Image (cartoon, rainbow, N blue to C red; front, top):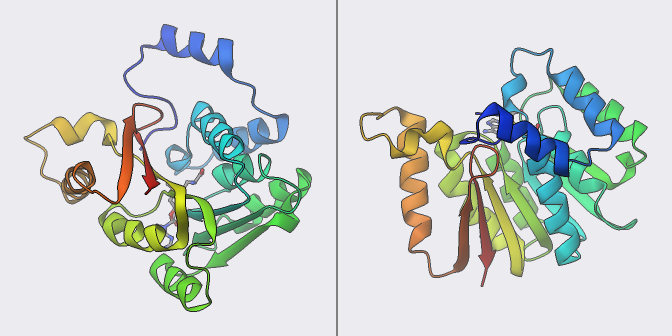
Length: 220
Ligand SMILES: C[S@@+](CC[C@H](N)C(=O)[O-])C[C@H]1O[C@@H](n2cnc3c(N)ncnc32)[C@H](O)[C@@H]1O
């Protein structure tokens, strides 16, 4: 995983940030606090958060479903881009980082529009479908365990409305997807997932080199 866009040297990356990043202070502070954690590289890059927020605004998204909360950066970036009556539903099995996430959501004044469901994501996704949430999300973001991506994608295809957008993180996986010598489980999982999406007629597709690779799949 990576919390900066790959494929750019330091000079160009700092130019990109210096000439486009408009990170609200609350997000910058959350990023600084998360940087002290051993798992800090799980957080999305700030330019990715800004890009996702722009997509949410472009679409006029009101409901956002996220798989993988961590310390709450992507949930907060999108919550800030939603209208007053917008809603974020974010799923994570770990309780470890919830207090941090909630502290920043409160500080940003958007905690009322973020619902965190703790537990195995597959269980929460099944529950959402059982509870009549099918087709009721505008935007979703898959950013949890890589071997479950195909299952998460199928759930998102049902939970997102036609014309809605599914974002998938880490689809370039540090470049390892293109290394034929790399046959580790996560690499193979993402490689197979990318290959399946390439020919999936249910979606419009783009794989962008933002962050660690961000795939955009629009449900047809
Ligand atoms: C890459 S981090 C998410 C980063 C987050 N989107 C951000 O912007 O900082 C992945 C998260 O997925 C969670 N996760 C991994 N496997 C999971 C599973 N099977 N069910 C629910 N959550 C899971 C982890 O606990 C971790 O917090």
